[in-house]
Length: 407
Image (cartoon, rainbow, N blue to C red):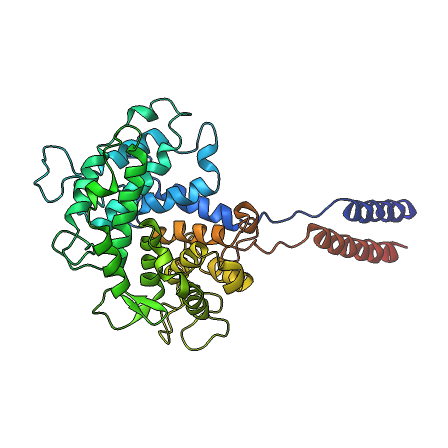
């Protein structure tokens, strides 16, 4: 029986030594980046047009693709060779969004970019489609076949021109009233296209496509209300989205110096809308759309940062740490981004804006998103060393009892 006791003690000592020498098994928590990437992979139309889809849908659409490409490009995925997504087919899909086949310039939709192939269209879907087109075109030299996918960009200028109104502004679609967001998207689209075709078609200039830019500038300035801008002259409330749209459009039209004396006051006003102390229905760190609107959200935050970035005022006007926290808190449980924090299901449309917002706040994206995703924390693991020690203790007690009885 002494031999049994000695063997038991030896085994116990060996197991104790082993439990202290070997590291415990650890959980493998998902990071924010992994959650986001997993979401985008799920939304990728791998069996169809190779664009991105909305939650609950299966067809490639314009806005989801626009948003996803902004995020994936910023995160470096498009620079991988080979890239994890078929960029050639994605560019083909973007080309197919343009309404041009079997149409001529007199058709309402001629040159516009649709929400989906042969789908609805307006100046906003056109803006997003063109932005996606030029982003994907940055890969033309590195990926065979990309340069062969072309688009009639002049046709898009024709469509944009149709949304111009006599008051100088642009509407969402032909015949629609002018508003600042549509005006910004219109002049931004014109600017991107005119710059892209300037070498091949030097005769295509602003004077051809917007001969009365002065009227557009004057209309924008009529939207001014205090230190902000309203969505249109007849609107009642100024907001950060309309203010950002006004500033961005004026900058494109080289008219920002006309309000140079007021730039500081405008920046102060935008900065004042960042929520630093939460009240009812607000979240710390983000922006409300306007004064006392109590609607802190990711889109107002995005446009506020666009405006302040343009004015080179982010460092002076933004509490950056809480702004970053707010944006990260808007990541939904499904890995996308929500309109506000604490959403289980987000919207792919907000993903690109969130990533762009983090960029404007000078964040290293791969670093800030490399932290554990609090929406998908690591499972609690029971350290096997604890289990082993408990088993050894129980075994030792059993051996001791048996030994005593046998003695």
